[in-house]
Image (tube, rainbow, N blue to C red; front, top):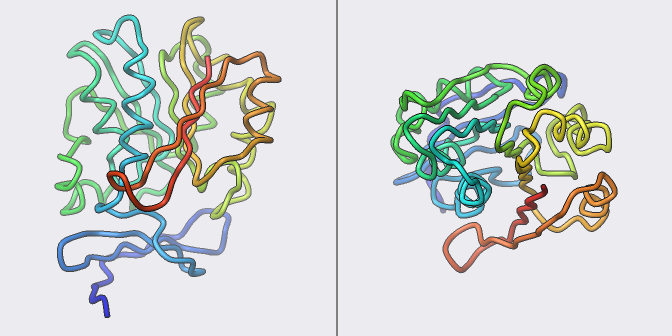
Length: 223
């Protein structure tokens, strides 16, 4: 039987549910109050790493890149992006739930190397959709790990990000040679087709959650 301690709970705006942060013997994990097991864990973050690293590796100029990450999670996507870009770059991470930011500033942050402390990091507490609407032609990379992917789990308002209108808005927030990246708990042919219908070239990659085992997640890169 697994032993764990509940460290914190945070309401998910507009959902009637909450996120719960737990500490195990040598790890942390987050669940949702309605059940369904772990949403994320410090032991299993291979696909989160890939979401940050893969699009940044495709950049022509990493030294001055502007990156937007939608969803802080446990900080692994942010940390991976920071490892791939130069000293003159910046990464804005948008997180809807303030408590998630505080958890990452506390003991949880040690597992990802405290990327919030990096001087290239900017934190926006709020809906990433607002940044997408307000910053046209600004970002080199936009990486979205919001909810469970196109099939939302925690908040129906997240569906907009994966709609045709949301995709077009994200495109408009990119520079002409920018890259969109999306994380999903699994494949979604309908969403992949939607990206292509928006005029994007799409590359789908399957990534293990932990090394070469565990759940398989999907990363789409679109440009």
